[in-house]
Length: 485
Image 1 (cartoon, one colour):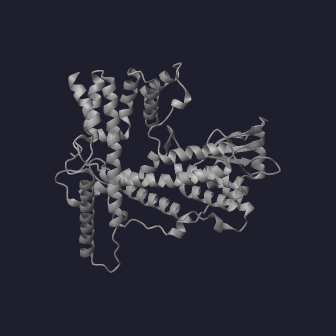
Image 2 (spheres, one colour):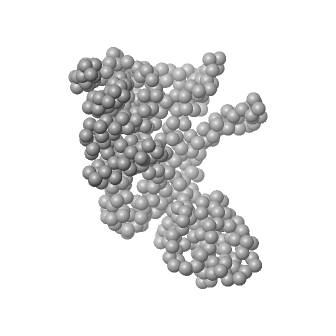
Image 3 (cartoon, rainbow, N blue to C red):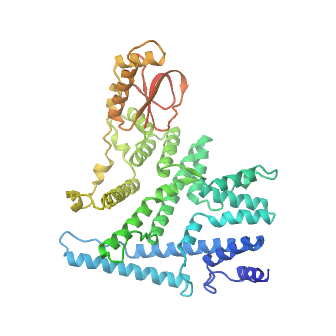
């Protein structure tokens, strides 16, 4: 007990400041786990809270230095007539300059007496919010129910598949003192807060608030994504690098692990409140274009649809574009994506090309690499910006996807009328739809009341006699064919 009393004094008197830089989140986390093990609940709370504070401080200073040095030393540019030997050494020199900038900045901000991180698994624990998993138990044992719920919820949001975390949350929610306002994510980022608010405004039909809050969510998201990318510069995976590998193999391992980390930032940041939104930027535009439309801002809605399609060519968003094209015939210029979305999507395309090549070519089959090909010696293909934003989808061809005869047979199937061509008709319908939507599968044909498809990425075509093959929205009635991507 005396040991933990002294350590607790350290929590309140010592932290990883410039005065006492030795007491880092790594040490405080260990103290907190030790207190947890012996049942010193208030000590556990004190250590874990200070560990989280120092982790935030460390992250803030770390990112600040990385951002500062990237800004002060942007990537060098070379002309086509540059000497190869100069280009190689100039890049190495630039890397040395940036390394010096980062080290100098961190030493000034974090102090030369602050020890380096001894165990990388501790960083992983903080990224997964593991301290909150200890905190929820310690708060519960210490009699602070509300704080226990908040800590448990904060951990669950970042670990939605953790079965024990779900059991803990169910336990708290079934207690008589539980209230909904206790479900507070202590680590919720600004972009998450504004996205949730924007979606809430959409559901409440507050169209101006929907637009402005989703705009702010995007601004905050891109700030967070930049920090995520900067953090990847310190996430090098040395797996597979041998002591006898030459410098190109080592540099490739560094670049590959960094790019893998940076490419995954979008997916990691697309978890909001414990729910995965796939591509959060695209989801922002999914809601925002509807809010623009409700405000009768058709051209802004069209641009939001174009942004979405560049990031994710979802069939239902293509249907929205088809609708806007009828409202603004001959006005293809209004479907031009924003420059920042073009650059964001193009960067992701380059990363994907790089990672696919690295993954494919690094595979050993029966102890051998794949046979050499021209691709092995070709540079990374540049994508022209104008070509990149052009959408080649043949909107006019949708109306002729299904023939009147096929629609008639599909109606018979939907109405359960006798026909000997059901299997053949369904196969033909699926093949015709796949000409425009290659990854789609026929879900079925129906006649009846208004309904919504069971899948999110649905293609709905009318099979009615008067408007066979008309492209319908997700909410549809009458007789229709539904295919899903």
